[in-house]
Length: 88
Image 1 (spheres, rainbow, N blue to C red):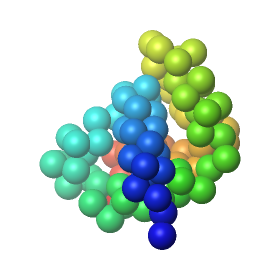
Image 2 (cartoon, helix red, strand yellow; image 1 turned 60 degrees about the vertical axis):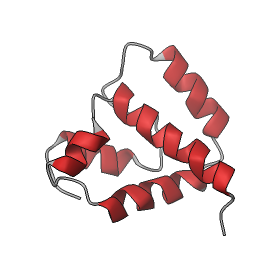
Image 3 (tube, rainbow, N blue to C red; image 1 turned 30 degrees about the vertical axis):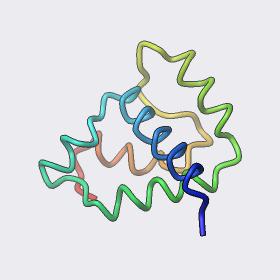
Image 4 (cartoon, rainbow, N blue to C red; image 1 turned 90 degrees about the vertical axis):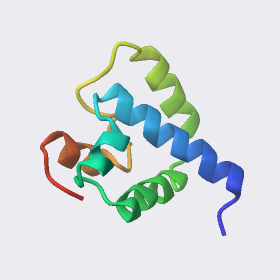
């Protein structure tokens, strides 16, 4: 079982990364483009990443946003699908 603090941290990382990429996860869910399970899977995928601190730093450096996440992002395909308008 994943520690609740770990889940909270990675949920925040997923949300923050989506914002950097110009994706509003809440809006995507309201429009039916992203299911709750897909968001949960993205958070769990993120918990397996060993680059969480580096990810925080990457997002700080990309304060004005970015076209794509860093190459090590475990959710790059999720973000790409949402940007392309493909439902998850």
